[in-house]
Length: 606
Image (cartoon, rainbow, N blue to C red; front, side, top):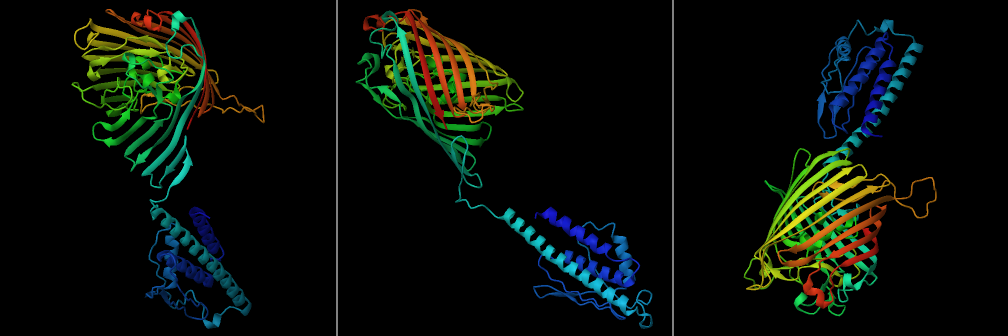
């Protein structure tokens, strides 16, 4: 029984005791006042105090003993007349609210209330009175037991509230993966990962894709990603992430100047992806992130590969936001949300440029140039209504990049991958050239209206004093290129994309009903979530004498979300490859033409 129930029971029994006494009987009035005084004395003492009040109401006098407690102390009651006590009880009945007050019972000879020996009641009436008193005493004893039980439970609840959790204990439960958490939440550890298995079929003429361009149009089945992850918090103020990709691969040569990538020289190199610590509650800047992380450029780039709409990002990822380093760069960044509903995000940082390092994730070795990137992104929700089902996201980013050894290469692969990264056919490529700096500027927009989404991004690159050789060679001037995409999607089953304010990007899709391949009851919804989508993407690398090619693709897709952690994706891609770099024509990398392909992916993350 909980504390309120015990208190209500206590009050009801008090009322029953008072109703049991006939107001016209002086002896019962004295007995009632005696019992009420005992109850008042109990309210004065802490739990477990024992009070002995002996009141003999037979004869011509009334006696009161000492109040004795377990610690050996005692207090003698002062006596007053029954009439005084009776009057005070009547006055106080309406004002007593359960608070402790001094209870003084003082009984003296009261001829006006106590009968004389000559007027002693008959024996039968006296027996009835004694029986009534015994009944009242029995009720009082039962009430005493309930009082003690009530006090024990209150003491137990108080002890539980004041007790401190053992910091060595962990709670283990499921929250998008296995999560360990201490009772005080000072430490958490979440274990997760992702696996993506692809099958791809390609078709093209030799003029469109070439004869030595990676795996060409070979069909393939391969693991696109296989990562394990641990993330959590330290003392509620430090976040951390440690994630490793076990199917990362690189070409073990010097790139275009060395041996072309083949199955014989492409090696597997497990590598970290997210590997950082974030310090929260930092004055002014709010959050500081240190380690290997994504640079703040572009909405699509900052959206996790677990939550992508299409099997591959647009051409902007390969060309600008994540070339040659898997999209992760070592550096220091600040992140600060702002606005009345935290609808804005400022994200900026400085990073070590590792774009042109073929076999490592950290910059190393001697270099006359610092090789640093300075990035900033500002995003904002112009409106966010209906619990995220009606919103408009806008954003912009800028990056000043100091290329390592002044070397730059801009290239892109297709929107379907038929092998390890270094063996995928390349559709547009500038080759190696040199420039003092590279500036990137991007604009982004995403509109969600219920189950419909429209999204677009544009990135422009400007390379200052571009030239074909480190010293001398052909001067291309300020070499400018651009890439963009426009996409639309719709959930046939009524879901919508979830927006994450802390990253200014989109997160996990949660179906209204999980899919059941073999439903026991066909009347229950069991189809998961279905999304249809389309995208147009373009990358133009032709400018001022440097012809890297112009590649466009048209993608149609269907996503079937079986549950929040698993989906099946299907993409059909039609690629229009134009004006490929003529420098590669003799190497069998071809020029222009149409390429079409179909791919499917089974993706699982936790």
